[in-house]
Length: 603
Image (cartoon, rainbow, N blue to C red; front, side):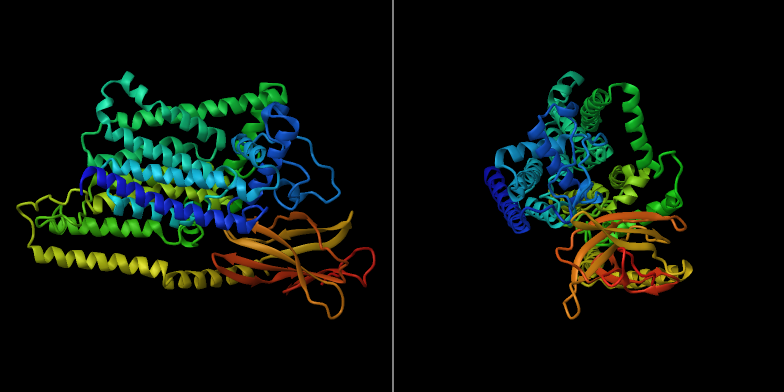
């Protein structure tokens, strides 16, 4: 295949795959309608939408350019959900996150008008697809053809951590798109390494990373390590293909990305200083938020639920990779299985496998390979190390940092395990060709069995889930019922109701508990689910009470309202008993029209 034809076919394949992904996500968004994304940060999306409307009403410079996330819209989500229906709307700025996502949504609302959620999602969807297209085309410059780039694009869109989050209207989609653009730019410039002769010319070539770093800094805090340090494992991958690449290939991107990120946060800090009227108040506000996200308490002490560093890390990884929420399979286990198999085969057969004339499969494992995967894993994990509380409480989106590890694994598989140059000769001391075929067949079957078992026949997941269920039952017995509900009652609040209760005795790291309110209009009527209170990723400290006050809209005059609970782990939903009044109960009555004074029975 000649060069022009290879490039054209690769671009066409990328357009088809990206177009299919865009069409699928746009169709999904139109079906969702004017509602927040149920998976990709519903809390943040509602806040961002209200902030966008407030920007358009009050002006971009109101409150020093900081967002106001409270308002009458989407009251059942985000910061407004914790307020009673008749409570006044707070008039204050939100200072703990950069305003980039809110300003972006304000621009989209300005273009499309209010109440057009599906259309707002067109932009992050298109940006995500464009970033994958750019990534694929950068690899075409390294010699990749339509098959490899098509597989890469499909693999990116297929993984939930990327594809499912494409329509997100807060930073979650934008940040990953900018990460892919940065990787594409780095690979493109590494290919043109002849322009990196001296530091001055290198800065001239790499300067777009300054803008990408600023964009990442304007979106979030969470992507600091990922956005700034991702060039290191990508450079290590590129060195597997071009060993002559120098350190400038990762040093300049890291420095410029970091400088841009810091500049964006310096601007945010200036906004907070102006808003509070001084540096000291701004430092207290932001430093207090950082301490809380790192430790879980404002005073810097670590609560018991956060566990030790080793236990917390093991749990975090199991939640991110085993539940199918972000990756659908145990990515780390697969990568380790491949590397260990390759290391064993290399020790027996030499550097090249099936290298008898044409090298179709090349299993090379050395210090550089381990360092490449180790750096990708470390960068993906670094936010959890520094901000353990924030990562543990928000594993469902912080875990997406492992998209870098996933991408490095894809690149390794497509360009190192399946080398571009298949003309390499076998070394002189190579084992007989037949032995290489046998070893390759065994390794391939082992890997295929692992993939099939994890993806299509999750027997291992079922065993793990049964073990977890048994452990949960044991914890319920140890903690005398597990989920303890104290003083549950439903009271009138304006035109609606308010559910007031306290929780105690929850010990469920990373699980999701959902409290369900079911109402009956009268005798013989059908029950209706009127409210769901999700405690996503809740890890509450046994022995401490956690008050909950939730506004509830029922829509009719209820005769009876009960409270129940389910535990969600992946796709498994398990009813959970509620311990109240000394006994375990499936349902607790919180409203009964036969009782006076809006009180509920104690049992």
